[in-house]
Image (cartoon, rainbow, N blue to C red):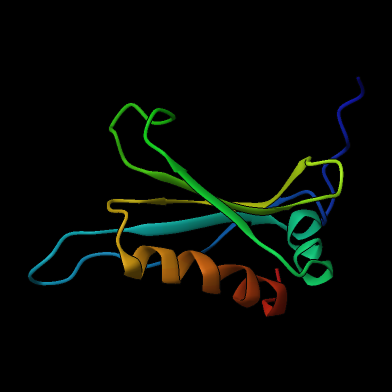
Length: 104
């Protein structure tokens, strides 16, 4: 299998983060590519899941994407966060929309 040459569509960008509050220490990072985020505009349903076994430190990895009629998963991006709260999921749901409008 050939590896694609790096282009503007395949370059990874970390486009948003929320770090450090005086009272609470937390972070949220959403990672995607232009090619992946272009699929978000074409879908009507979302699939979201969280796992703790991908990172040694135990932080949750939240994935967002869609499934097609053959039940194949097509990701838009991943989010690494210190928690799995409502605010973290809000960040995850808002991030693809923000990324599709951001110039990279």
